[in-house]
Image (cartoon, rainbow, N blue to C red; front, side, top):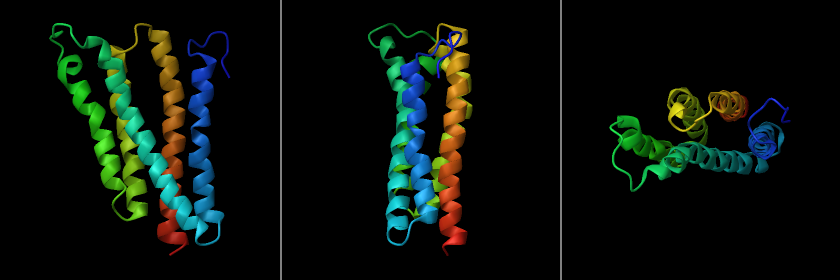
Length: 163
């Protein structure tokens, strides 16, 4: 999976893409499994979606930890906004878990896309190598779009096909 010109280590690529297995598998079970397994799969997909949505926000905290104990940089993103943005996806995902499952799935899918759109402009603060940032964003785009598609598909199945 890691060609010689890709600066992302193969373990990162493998773990990242393996993280799609629950999304794809559970979305398929929502559609194809008999009741009650389809409902349990929807609940599990919502839980996994919330974990991944939270994880993607937490990347900002992890990337910002090196700034602790240092004088403020004067950059609003580094000094303040990264910390705030890092917790917002977790809060949104938590709320999404407490509402009607298909609506929660759609909220998480939307949150993943919004995160990706914001992160493409903020990861510049975390990568010292532009090639690594670009390679990471290629992977991130693929992961985000597949995960969001699975969440959306499961919501559509629940709302319109199983209704």
